[in-house]
Structure formats: C-alpha cells, structure tokens
Length: 521
Picture 1 (cartoon, rainbow, N blue to C red):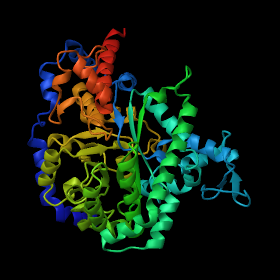
Picture 2 (cartoon, one colour):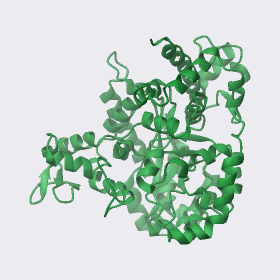
Picture 3 (cartoon, rainbow, N blue to C red):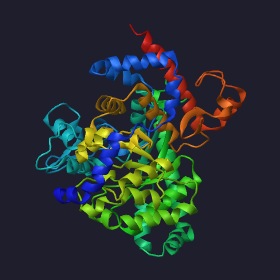
Picture 4 (cartoon, rainbow, N blue to C red):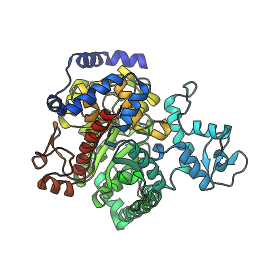
C-alpha cells in the first residue's frame, strides 16, 4: 500500500517538496522584530548558536526559556505513569499481571493489587512499560498500536482524580516556564452516552439536536459537567494550595478545557458529545472548544469522517462562542488507503471550521497540497506540532516531517506535547528536538512560544495588532513590552483581557530570561 500511495501521490509530493526547498521563509513578526532586535536579544541568539551542539547546555537554556502554552494536551496521557500507579493504588484498584490492564477489585487470579506496583521491582517496570512508551522497541507491535493501547490499560486509574492530575501537569509546565494549558476531557461521558443511545441517530441534524435538548435532558448534563469541573478544580486548588503562602508553581498556570468527542463512536454519540461541548463553551468560560479524539485511522473514524465534519458545519453557526480544534491528518501511507490521505485536513478547515489543526502530518498527500498550505496560511489556521508523538506513533520525523514545510508557507505553528506522560517527555524536549533538527533560531523559538498564546482560546483581545506580526496594539506602544509600568490605556487592556495579560507577562519573562542567561558565567 505504501508503494501504491507513493506512485499515486508522487506528483503533488514532488511539487511540494520542490516548493519547500525553493521558497524563502515567509515574512513574519518576527522578521520586523529581527530588523530591530534589542542588543540583549541578539546576544542571546548568538549564545544559542554557540551551544546548539552541547546537549546539556541546550537543554538548560530551553528549559529556562519562556514557552507560552500547551495547546494540544490529553489529560489522561499527560500525567506521569508513576502518578497513575499511585492513584490506582490509592483507589484500591487491581492490575492484571498478564495484560497489565487496570481494573476494579477484588484482586484475584491474575489481578494483583495496584499497591504492588508502588515498590521498585519487575512488576512496576512491567506496568510502566505497558502504560507508556518507556523502553518501547517496534516489532510485532507497532509504535502506533502500543501507544493507543496504553489508554485502555491505565483507563480505570485515570478518571477519578482529574484535579490531582491537572496539578501535576501544571506544576511541570510552570517549572518549564509555561503559563497556559488547554487540556482535553470528556464531559459527562456516561450520561451523554446514555442519552445518545436513548435518542438514536437522526440524519436530520436539526431534528437530532431538538431531541437531545428536549425536556432539559442536555442541560442537565451540562450542569453536571460544570459541577464535575467545579469539583476537579477544587481538588486542583487544594492539591496546589493555591491562595496560600505555600502555593505551588502550578497555581500560576491558566487552565482551560477542550470538550472531546470520541470520533470512533456511533454517530449519535459523537453528535451528542459535540453538542454538549458547544453548550458548555457557550455557558462556561472554562470550557473553550470542542475536539475529536481517538485514532483517525480506525475504520469507524474513516467511515464517519465526512459526516462528523457536517455535524460541525451544522453546529458552528449555532454556537459562535465555541472554538473548534481538530485532530486531522494524523495519518501516513500504509496506515490507511491512499484515498483516505487526500482530504482530511482540508475538510477539517473548510467544512469542520477548525481554527487549529492537531498533527497535520499527511499534508503533502492531500489533493493540491500547495493550495491547501496557502489556504491554511491565509486563514491563519495554526498547526499544533507534537514532534515526539509523530515519531513514536507514525514514525515521521526529521526531514520527513512537514513542520518546516508549514513554516515555509507561512502557516502558523506551535510546539505541543500531546501525551507527555505516555511519551515520557516534556515540552522542553520538544523545543530541544525542534532546535536541533531544524536549526531554529532564538527568534524562531520565541515566535513558537508567542503563537502558543496568540492562538490559544483564552478569552480577550490580543496584545498584538494582528496575526501578521508581533507588533503591539496602539494602547501598548511607547513602553517596553512586559514592563511593570504599562501606559494607562495598556493597563486597562491587560486588566480586561486574559489573553493580552498572558502575552504581556510572557514578553516580560523573555526580557528577564535574556538578561539572566547573559549574566551566567
């Protein structure tokens, strides 16, 4: 199949590859900033170039650099495997000693108490390997299959303590100088599934929506989901001791939720999950977007892809406050039929109204890929790029990865982790990988961090005039970006806009970072 795909797509792929080699970098914010960069900024750029081949120094440099937000993060896959084991033991769960799947008790036969995996030893090592990519080597089982199988194995341990899980994730982010998190959850999962099963699917989407909303059924689930998040955030604040002198670093991270729908489920359930996500984003500012999760190559995902885009096309105008970010193009030749590689990203944007695309790996296999790349650039559709995830699941990395191609066409990009717990990485690892593999400059890395806030779905006006350049709005000109004494008009903007406040804070953090690294002897 891979050979057939190569023959079928060779024309477009060759044109895109040539364009990638011949096009100059698209003019960005960034170009203007380079022309007038501060002396300290230029000095830091030179420092980075000097340590690029020194792994330890490069890691320390990028670990300390402000890195904005993580826009592509699955909570259950983001926490460390060690925390999942601890939670499983705390909740009295069992782990099958053959399949390493977590389960409720009693712990009999092949089911061992999760408590047994707390101590260092062979069983703990086996569980960590089964629940993550630790020490994984492709063989009879592919990276794709091992990766996605982990969620079913640790699933029973991953849903009872979302607040504790958010606390660990935000602590990790704060330690790496990130300030914003969008993480994915499935709100009121059991109730939505039951309602979808009761109502069934109706191809008349307007009629289906009316049935789901009838008699306050969906609103009751919305209220339940909001209450669940109240509980989770209370657990998070308690764990982090937010608002006390002992507050942990994670308290400084702004957290928002994407409501995920399971694309491989029945059409009725997918629609119901998208609907509750839209309703939540309209009623509660903590819920900002909807997304489709589960492997894009599952047969049911492929069979229903266009229908699910039509669902989003129907719902989008009814819920203008709800943002849409979609996994699309997380595919490679050989994983699916050649024709399944030709339209997913385009449909996600043009029919599904996606404002951001997660992964987008198969872009060169789409029909008229060059036109699609220009469309993404013109529409300012950001691509969330989790380099390690793409390497582990799809074996796409280095020059085979479309990341440089997106950048050459001027498509906005941001680095993301995807599932750092499963992958056994953190965001600094992604920045190091990008800096080494693609020889990104300091300015390039700053722009990736800026994008992760600019294209985040946190509410409010941006600090920047437009998405063609990181030039401040008129209210915030005349003073150093990120300074402690913005102009009165700028201070008013920062007070009214969470987005602008995050961006302003990051600019100040850049200045502090640049000064500190130059002062290190």
